[in-house]
View 1 (cartoon, rainbow, N blue to C red):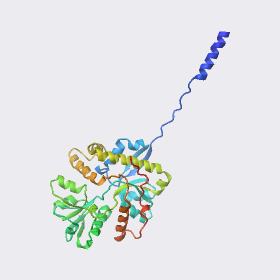
View 2 (cartoon, rainbow, N blue to C red):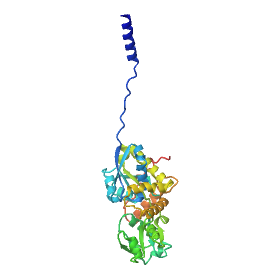
View 3 (spheres, rainbow, N blue to C red):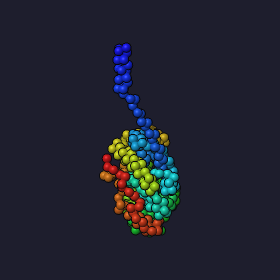
View 4 (cartoon, one colour):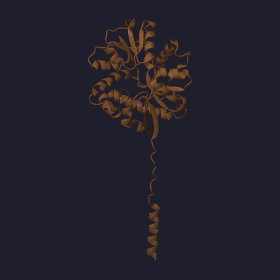
Length: 325
């Protein structure tokens, strides 16, 4: 009987000392976020693809879904709260704010405005365009704003140039001599022409006026209700941008997985396009907006009648979500 009591006491003692089963905290499911891109899958979005592929968004608890389309339409969706994030240009932010859409630019990407004028004939300065036929994709959008900015900065009367709408046929129109010059994206058509063996003269708009270009845009509601989400998006995108600048070859390999149109034949051209993009992305202070550039952009847009009233430039952008690594 004594032995049995000792045995039962030992069982009770061991039971009391047993380690309880650990509590397993379930890993929260990643938050799905739609990023409106403003174009089709393209090498220009390489830093975003790098951020996805290397898990930078996932590390922030985010799962990114791309939504491609025209940037003006997508910006309206962000302004009305139907989307939270879009990649777009500063001039579009100013236009949207003038129309009452509460969009906010939260991360600078393109440090230089990428629109330029290209020609297969010698072209040294904007005044060389006077009296010439110049093709432009359309009388709207970033190309048109860049064109107007160049004329304004160079003090050229728009009526002194024969501006023609040619759609996105700049390369063909230049090669066949239909126009003397064309409004282009500096990292696109000039690269195509050089790869084809042509000598190209290029006048970048950014050499004459500092207009805020592409970056990450959200809205006031998202900033107020979920600032950490904005901060997470900015952190992930900047990591992808830094990686791309540091190792473009590895970044291009990743890009090819997201842009199926890049095959072995087109890869050299697209790699050259990415190389040209790097010149527009580099900066000592990646992500930060320059207040002076916003002031210049608004003053120009008001001067040519794109907006009617002057607004506080602090409404257009914020640098609070950009943190140095």
